[in-house]
Image (tube, helix red, strand yellow):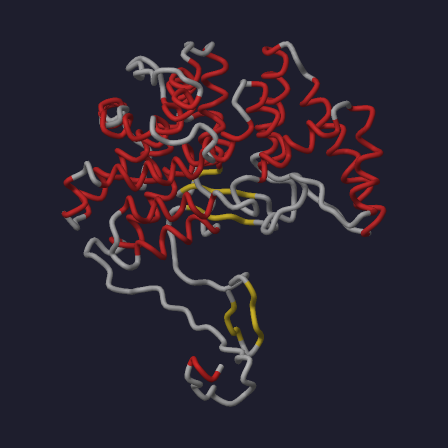
Length: 393
């Protein structure tokens, strides 16, 4: 994707402002991530995922009464139509989880009459359903692909703990449930990243929220976006032992390859979320009886930064994926589900952006995203091609 800014071609729309938002602000130079005015660190330490989802959707933190009502709404939506469960059972067990999630979200639209009601209230109702049901789809698919029966959520558990319960069949320890909740808060929103822009672009056509969210999942499935922590964990598994870290770093940098989880397109400091994820990964390793993966990650961070500084003469910074990988692995989450867990969280941000894109001024918007492209020619040369009948080609 290219655009022209002051006569200079900009690949990937980097640095190009395409819309305004009140939802979040990423201050890369300062290392700050803000959700509707609140620093993400304060939210992760003090608020539940449900409170943060409410904040993103409704622009303010809920009162106790509003939170109780919102939790009840989410609880009432933590199920899938039986026809969807039947359909999931027909999918090959080796299907990519993100493909299954994208298909599942599209399928949900067929069971929701609100898709025919283009009003803000209808969109909010569908948004709440999606926040609840994305977690259910991910957990149900994981159990089905392993020959197990999907598990019904427990009303007394919060969103993060319920996801772990539906995934594993065991109620998580309170500390583990809280860790998952905090991880979901940290991943819930990040301004105009690729998947959010995909959701907003589709929403600008006045497609319903399921279509926009499905597009976001498709974008998140790409290896340059949502699967970065998958590649971090694959890197750690490949290294295998902390004693091999320095040799691995040297080998990768000399070959011109990247160290997964180091470097970010926006932050010019360590990702603010990493300061919360790192100690959680360490503590989760201790709870699981295996600190190897956190220890290796920490050693890799130090060695990678030092080697990069020596080779490039500049700093490289930890991103959100670096410590979420050992955290999820210590929780027992399969590596190929890491991107899906990302979606369980980020759906709160996506649906909030869809609402903003379509109803920023209360009334439905009519602006359609329609960027320009630069046509660079064809094999005929600069002239238009002359059509040649098939028999003469």
